[in-house]
Amino acid sequence: MVSLTNLRKFLLVVLAGIALSACATQGKKGSNIAGDVYTGNDTVEYLATGVKDRVFFATNKSTLTTASRDTLRKQAAWMRKKSKLKFTIEGHADERGTREYNLALGERRANAVKDYLMTYGISGSRLNVISYGKERPVNSGSNPLAWSQNRRSVTVKAE
Amino acid sequence: MKKILLFIFYLFIFNNSAKALVEVDITRGNLDPLPIAVSPLYVESGSLDIKQGDKIIKNVGEEISKIIEINFKRSGLFNPLKKDSFVQKPDIAHVKPRFEDWRLIKAQALVTGKVTVSEEKLRVEFRLWDVVAAKEMVALAFSTTPNNWRRVAHIISDKVYQRLTGEEGYFDTRIIYVSETGPKTQRYKKLAIMDQDGANIKYLTLGNELVLTPRFSPKNQLVTYLSYFRNLPRVYLLDIETGVQEVVGDFPGMTFAPRFSPDGEKIIMSFAKDGNSDIYTMNLKTRVVEKITDHTSIDTSPSYSPDGKYIAFNSDRSGLQQIYVMRSDGSNVKRITFGKGLYGTPVWSPRGDLIAFTKVRKGKFYIGVMRTDGSGERLLTENYYQEAPSWSPNGRVLIFYRETKADSDGKGFSAKLWSIDLTGYNERLIETETDGSDPSWSSLLSK
Image (cartoon, rainbow over the protein chains, first blue to last red):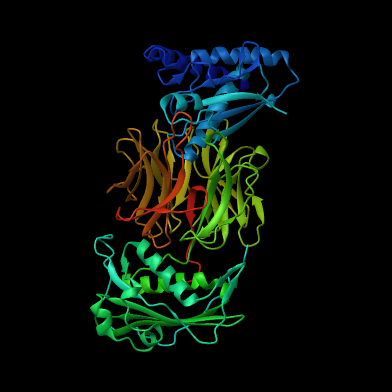
């Protein structure tokens, strides 16, 4: 039952990912933003060598892009090796939305990541979710690049 | 927190039948504010100075009159006249104004008064005079403790406002908000409370944990807000008189966007689980939790109608954030916004006829009002970022917060509290010691 729901979610995520990657090519060259999603590495940190800690989202969306799914599969592979570690997935939004909606949106983004990690075999009990809405931007600018870096979900090791 | 002290009112002359010539037209905004003279309240001989902390208030009568003038000026409906043009002395004017003198300086209304200060007691009487008709309109006296002298000024302002506009005032009220300091990437936020005019700021939390969206109960001195205490974002209840706080309900996840029901007995809020936010209520007495919406979309920012029969909220069930209205049991959900752009943070007016909201369109943020069926949209103010309107208890003024654009280093960012009239006129900054956001207006402290 559980795996069935997860599978359905997984399929949805894959389909949405295809749709998104189709329009991603329209992004400006050199801006590190494809469509509306940040594709650069400027704010990214690493959980381990080659394992990025975060994925980025389009405005008002919680869909995982192809690149995000790639990052999360690497996270899952690493998490499987570190079976004793627990994680917190932080969901964030940019400053261009109302505060309360952004809290919900951050929660939705963090859960999209959690669901994806779970389809790759990570137990939900190891994954805690928290939304910060627009309260913890990583880039304090008020411009499209800053907003794209702030629309993110970050996986951190839980203490 | 300091207890709200009881005021003892006694009407010493009741003059209700007098037909007044002066009245303020409140439908037009601040186009033609009423010229009013506020004579300094006469301090009776033998009165003491008021000691407040390390401050000594020497002439409390004059201080009170200044606060009344500021209230009037900020309302946009009155034009307080300069005191240096006043001819009559305060003590004589209070007994029997020479109306010709006041007419000469174009005053249409006059406020006079007298204060007596003893160790324990501040006794105040004031009169409102119709200068044009040469008549007394209001006469009222009351007593309180000397420390409450600012509230005396606000109460007089409310009585005058009510007599001249026909509507209840909003000056003897407080505002709870979030005080903000520090850089944008690491903001410290504390709950703060102040008088409506920005005086008497007090901080209610230390800033150790993130706090957001405080809202006053319409009935008492309770506040509900979101706190990240122990990194668990939950809705809390705080008694600002006792300082006692508690978590609202026992939810296995984030609760947020709290507000009180109009009777003060329930909290309505969102509960987020597995990427889905729905609206719930909890009865504060019975602790019964009810699920109000059940939809795979984000349903949040709920606000009751003042009769408690309906709830407005925003949802992205249509794809993007829009405002909906439903019965308070969750039935009969209707979308009410169909304009271009996103709509959020609906807040039902205390009069019941309007809903204030935040609108986002083409990279701009607007505060607006519309009828409860979504018709008659009026956008009051446009800016880079502003949201979260809260109504004055008389439904006449909206307070909200506005953030400024930052450069690529985050410089130039600020968050400030602003107010604007329902008419779209009279936009004003409310000055606070620190940056501020998420303001919520209390009901009148004394009625």
